[in-house]
Amino acid sequence: MTSGQGPVLVLEDVAKRFGPIEVLTGINLTLSRGEKRALIGPNGAGKSTLFNLVSGRFAPSSGVIRLGEKRIDGMPAHQLNRMGLSRSFQITQVFGGMSLYENIYMAVMSRHGKRWSLLRSGRVWRDIAEQTRELIDYAQLTSLADRQASTLAYSEQRALEICMTVATGPDLILLDEPTSGMSRVEAANMVAFIGRMTEGRTLLMVEHDMDVVFGLADTISVLSQGQILATGTPAAIRDDPRVQDAYLGGSAH
Ligand SMILES: Nc1ncnc2c1ncn2[C@@H]1O[C@H](COP(=O)(O)OP(=O)(O)OP(=O)(O)O)[C@@H](O)[C@H]1O
Ligand SMILES: [Mg+2]
Image (cartoon, rainbow, N blue to C red):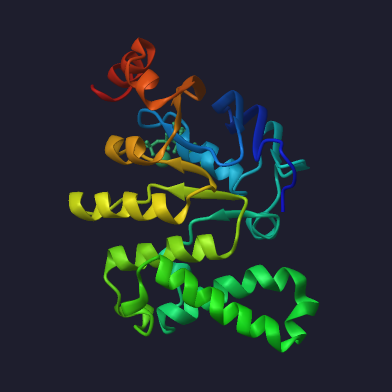
């Protein structure tokens, strides 16, 4: 768990090379507690690479990444999870044979499991069950609680993933294109759902869809050719001529 008032996530002069190719250079980024940051940029800008550095899939070639006060660059994903970082669960990590309730119960349990000795007390198990119920009610998934996860519709499975991510009680939530593969209506519902479920939490997302970005993010960072071109409010980014140039130069032809 990160502590105190300081930033939740800091990247200092981070670079990533794949062989001779420098994909990211001189990345500096700070996320305050409660901030909702979107990473946008043209195809090939380095968004997924940056995301993968933070989520522990790759180690940076140089530079420092901190979660709270702890250095996390190069740490594997499972260790980051225990330190309070949660990448939105992929559908493959939802247990298809278990009910929605059971999946969320497991995620709530993993939070309590950090204090393993407490699990010996019966009260903790009642707390876990109660918190699972509360979360499902808050997410308005009560009518689906007993459904086997594999029988849920695609957008319902994505909602379950978000719920599981929140249930683990992370300090930082990472979302990778949370509305990909959804219709306009489903995407709009998902944005509202994520907004509600992540209220007061710190979020870093990669997203192509501008409606989603504008619906969820309070700050946007624009990546272009491996560097952060601009960071600002959605309105400032929309009106920034450098950003408009990057998009036209990067993906329109
Ligand atoms: N494992 C890898 N090995 C070599 N090059 C890679 C690797 N992963 C990414 N790249 C290159 O790094 C650059 C940035 O890729 P990245 O996937 O981070 O971009 P992106 O901004 O996520 O693009 P998109 O919008 O298409 O998802 C691209 O030129 C890509 O070819
Ligand atoms: Mg990508």
